Length: 141
Ligand SMILES: [Zn+2]
Ligand SMILES: [Zn+2]
Image (cartoon, rainbow, N blue to C red; front, side):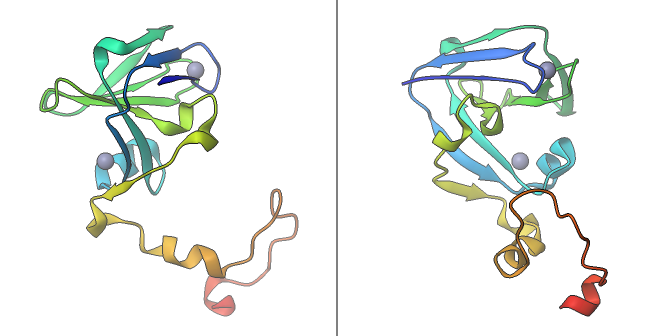
């Protein structure tokens, strides 16, 4: 399988040729903080079959656990830990074709954002919401 991706500004790119080891959505509190997003979608890859271009920095979010990002645009790129030395988790949102992503598991359910359940029942817009509803969430419940 061949996949490729890039950060928001395009300075960092990746290409992968190998089997995807996982397609998981993570709801853990660390990923929520690290990405400023309610959940994170990852592709598990074999490090030796993954090639990066461009400068990457990382943050050690817990001992021997590293979260890579582009220093130019801040896009999150990967999660890796010495606990799983034969696997690197690449953020699925950086895929050149993110619609190709098919998650098959979600993990750390106790910290899953409760408001995700609310999404199917609230108003949806094609683009940015032009006219705020003018109601507080309590009024529109
Ligand atoms: Zn970038
Ligand atoms: Zn996580």
